[in-house]
Length: 421
Length: 157
Image 1 (cartoon, one colour):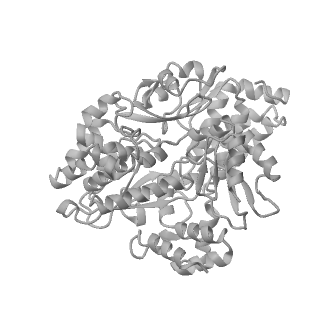
Image 2 (cartoon, rainbow over the protein chains, first blue to last red):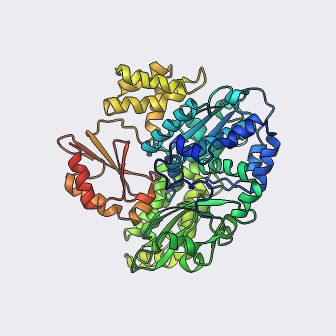
Image 3 (cartoon, each protein chain N blue to C red):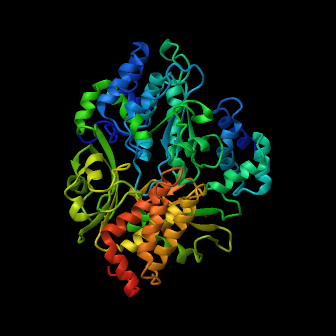
């Protein structure tokens, strides 16, 4: 079932062209739901059956999210795709818009039909310009062929979709910061409630989903929610794209069924680089707690299994580390990232991320103090749950995970002023 | 201040958003202005503000918040190296060291001839291709080795 849902055509030449997508039955499902006037409730029901959960990291059930949208609201409503992929270790959405952009467009158009939306935006990470350009070209192709625009397929259904480029701010991956950014402001998250379903882009009802989430929709419509669910496991439906980076022989993206053993995924990525052995894995992007090798090798890749091990599947971003990695140095780099990317709005995050970085920096550089480990734990508990958005928690969790599993390395650094690795 | 080509590109961006929401085009307008002029001076920010009907301070807030905008002159080629965890595991430290020694500058510095600026960047969402860098916010060069870096530098005249 590898590459079943999204990367099915990835090995075709110019798989991103409209002609390639049409050759695999592309846009048939959009045409079907629009021309046959499939009731939106039926589509939402299939998405619920599929157990598709938000692929951006939070894992929120997509069908449920869609049902929050006030369908009969008469004013403007918006649909937004979050391709602002900046979490260290995450690089799947870039490949979706590089290799199969039309499936994303079709998924968004079906979502727009379902929720009665006429205008959508795809917010694309600033650093992937070539992918942004390719997506713009795909939009042009779809407009020219009558898959985007007004009165599609001769009906009264209209959907206009545009691309918006970010320009270097991790926090804009947070959905309300992303909305602020589309509005032409600095990307500072909004206090919730109100939630975007009632007060979103330009203050109008808005649904925001991740790229991979939308791109899964045409498959669910074609084959039914049950078939998608069966590609994965109960409550964790479908395939998922896992991005594997770090100390592996063949880093890259792998679309496999939810619930596939981690050991199999590691093998697909060519295994740990030659001559080395696995030390630890960050299974869901830099924000989630690290998992030691011996625990990780027994886990399956799905939301529930990784959560049981005290970490999170996140966006499926797997960072592999071998025995040469100093956990203090690794954490120092991650903590610098959150310090640099904190938007500065909430005091616990703005000040706390600076404290975390500076304390870990001094431990790494041989100036750690005996009380520093308790200080780190204290700072993380003063950030967690005390900020408007999840960036604060994202900064705290890697520190908590490292102290839980590798406290001895931090203690060694403090005591001996050097690394034990 | 900006060429007719740049203004046409900005107009195309404005058209993406609902009437009365020109401000939504500010990120693209600043990107287009920077592509033409190399960096964003306060005169450029004021021009963009006037063009979009925004307060200059609101434009400055955006330009100073997103880290791909340059508020001071940079070299003809800005090379931004990702040094985040995945790239570091995959060799970003040695690529950075090689760039620094080849160019004779550190992060945040520009060569005396004004040709290169070297910057340290955050995750670019392409970790599978690490180590990597971005040239002038546009061209991503991945799977780097010292030899590949030398080749790319030779192309950037």
